Amino acid sequence: GEDVEQSLFLSVREGDSSVINCTYTDSSSTYLYWYKQEPGAGLQLLTYIFSNMDMKQDQRLTVLLNKKDKHLSLRIADTQTGDSAIYFCAETPYGQNFVFGPGTRLSVLP
Amino acid sequence: GAVVSQHPSRVICKSGTSVKIECRSLDFQATTMFWYRQFPKQSLMLMATSNEGSKATYEQGVEKDKFLINHASLTLSTLTVTSAHPEDSSFYICSARGAGPRTDTQYFGPGTRLTVL
Image (cartoon, rainbow over all chains, first blue to last red; front, side):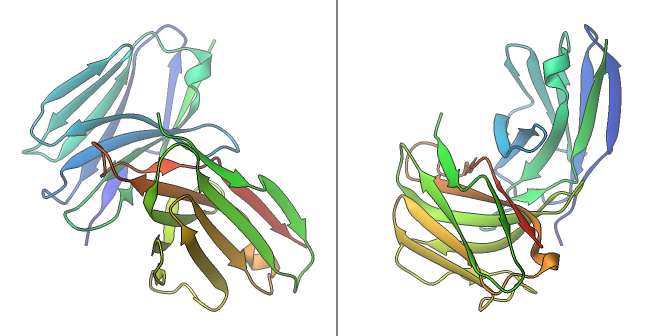
C-alpha cells in the first residue's frame, strides 16, 4: 500500500535554513503537498508541487521533487521561531485520498 | 485561500453522551468533505469521506453507527460521536475539497478537541 515517510524531529537555529525530507511510494500521485500544523490547530496548506515539476519556490519556501527516487523536500530559508510546528508531507495516489506522512516536528532554537 | 471552519473548537463531555461537530466551507462549495482523527503526536487518520447528498464512505475499522456523518449541503458536514467514551477523546479535523482550479487540494479546518470524561 501507499506509504509516506518522514524523519520525526528536526532542530535548527534561528536564521539557519531548515530542510525537511519526505519519501513516498506511489508514483501515480499527481500532486505532493506540504502542510504545517501549529500546536492545537488544524493543518495549513503551505505549498504543493505538481508531479511533472522538479522545483517550486514560494518566498522562503523551496520544494524539491526527485520523482525517480520518490523524494520530496521542503527547505525553509531564514527559519524563524514562528516556523516551529509539525510539517506533514502528503501524496495523492491516483483516485485515492490523501496519504499523510507521520509529520516532522521542527524546533527553532534562539 | 479557501477557508474551512469547525465548531466547536473544544468540547468536554461525559461518557455516554453524544457530541456533534460541524464543518463548514466558508467561501467555496465543498463537493467532498473528509473527517480525520489525530491522536497526540501522531499523523492524521482518515475516518470517512462524504459527498454532498450521499452516504459517507467509512475507512476500515471505523464504526459508522458510532461516528455519524451527514453532508447535508455543499457547505456543511457534521460528525456526531454517539455514546462517547474516553477512548474517543481525540483531535478531530475536517477538510473540504471543492470545485475550481485546484480540485485535488484539500483545505483543512482548525480542528475540534474532544475530551470525554
